[in-house]
Length: 311
Image (cartoon, rainbow, N blue to C red):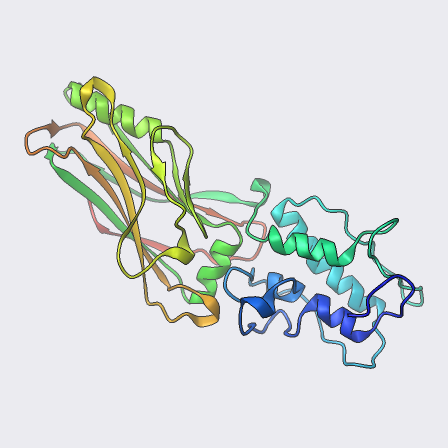
């Protein structure tokens, strides 16, 4: 591009920042979608794309004057990403029709190419004030059990694009568990301690994390899942010598077509509670809870959640 202080701003400069495709059109691959504002807020490709349909970023033909409205549309889209990701960047101010539009490459003015690159790098970050947590599923076992019990559920999207938009905007599956009531045996207490210690397990776009201590979370998220179950998280007990008891999360994807860099429309997840012993009995109430973190401040469709195997 010719974009530089002292140079006329060409349509090719603007289109380089916007991207070859508009926000409503998919990009052919990740490379083409990199550092393209329209790819970040629109359909994009793979981990780029928020799926926002109320964005206006028309193309500017070569040899055509880049208008103030064109620039302001670009800055408005950048502002959406800046706010959502919590990047706190100082963006260029809107321009007025008839005014001289000066190149922003640093110094006294914001470095426009650098700003777009930073927003691209930060695209999967989120400002928690832009997000909301919603209860989805709760499954409780009220009878005694031995060995292993599993809460299996599906997260189903209408398309691979809506799945991408959910995870690209910071959407996550939250899992947690609890053990209450019962005889108050050492095993019951050990399980209650384990589930309390691990906190909340969070499955995101590229990794699984958790809020507690003592467990192991793996760098596997939606885009890393395959057609077979992978272990995303595991935690073993420690109280009263019950080091064999465990809680494990496994996930796989289904209906994978790879459309626009997507990775399936169904995420199937298992929350596995195990004594790893044929003799130890757990009684009381064993509960598995599923919540959703979603970008409430953006227009993002929530998937449906369905329990397929109860505890």
